[in-house]
Length: 405
Image 1: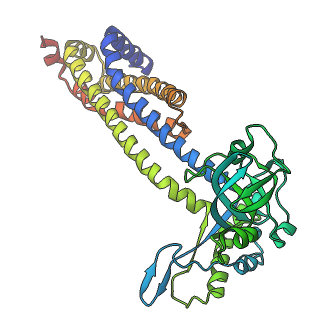
Image 2: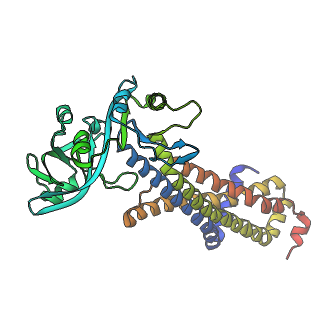
Image 3: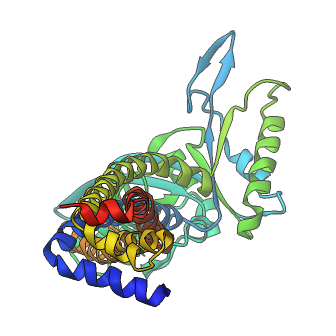
């Protein structure tokens, strides 16, 4: 019997029981739709994390005080605060490094007229905007001369500016009070949104790090140093060079752990994505259970179909149909049910992910490989769960089948 004829018989058999075929497909539809929707949620969350981290700067490397080991007593990250401005100067000698900025921070009340706002004052160097790919909306950033002179100049985050001066107002050249010091406003940074850690990037203000250290916080050490490389390919090499130079500068003995932590964007993305990946895998695993249930439903219905059509199978085999023809027919029926159900499920999963984004504002992303995987899995489920009923039909004795009531 030709393949075309086998296909016609298979589709005709499915068409005779449209409701039962549709209900059998429903298990596959729900399973595939659930898998697509769950994968879309996980992928969307990971993409959002990567975008948030990358928005903090291109090819950025962050150097923070690390742990120390003194007399067998170890302190955690930040326990050995010994980053100094001279460390940042040394890092500028690394060939792969393009920009470096010393960073210190303190909280303070900023006041303009009868308005005031408590915010984070970030002490930075002139390279900070280039490292974080951050431009000014109004005015300009401070200069190298301001840093050297410890000038009392400040650049506001958009949230700070809105609270002090009002939305859409350019406060450039105005004076504000920070603690008991008068600062001249040079400009306002563009809106940045939340960082990967959830911090509002716009609720802070920037001043020369020398000014913050000498006139606001009184600290002698840096909170951290940020840097960026000339290209993405040089990030890892630069991180290794930074570690080596700071170990040498801090006289860390060979064999002892580093006293600084050097984090690249890849490290931060991996750290932030780990929890999301675990949750995505869990959700996808739960959704896969639906596929298995759908496959069992296909097997159940196909076994019922074999029983109902025993006389038909016997008649076909009596007039010359081979066992392989019957096997192929029932396999085609099972694969069609699962494949069509899978295709509908993919569409529903994609639509469901868009609805989640629309109503809940959760980021979703449907990867192409997830769609391909769902298609392959749905076809495989049809073959796997349809093989036993098809084999049972093909192994029927024609004479016994014709006698079946």
